[in-house]
Length: 196
Image 1 (cartoon, rainbow, N blue to C red):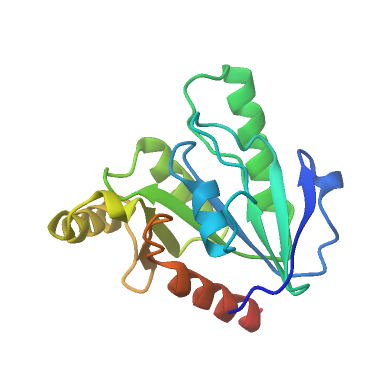
Image 2 (cartoon, rainbow, N blue to C red):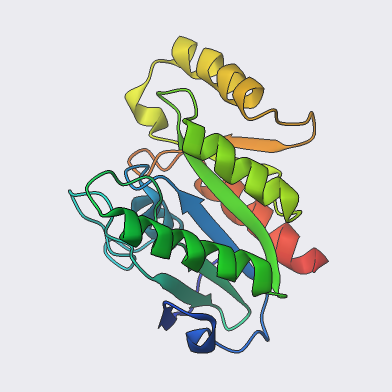
């Protein structure tokens, strides 16, 4: 897939601020420090389109990026950031759930986990949530450049086991530094939106 046009279509905290549901959407979700914005920038071939930060928890809104006037990548708020209040965490949780429950044109959610560590309780909870809504089946294991090849295979097996991935569920190792996973993720998105 070649990205020709790219527009930040909307920044939302509630459904009335979402753009019209006239295009298929794929959403990205993950813990606050998993490298979600960096991965989105890598996929879009932009350095600073999705906002990145050295401090986790930067994405506090739902950001809709419209690509080639044909589909959208949706950047959901990171979950599990420790240094925010309980009320703020609940607000982000509601924001994510409202989007997942109400968005009819949502094709698939890519859940990001850190390849260096086993999935956390919150990662497991999120994947169960996605399974409940029928949006499971794709996991992206980030930061693959920070781990040896031997550990990579071992950790991929651990992630599959902990999240109880089915045999045909997809797990892609990715790195915004080495660009591993770039083509694989974009090809998968293209397949998903074509099938929609």
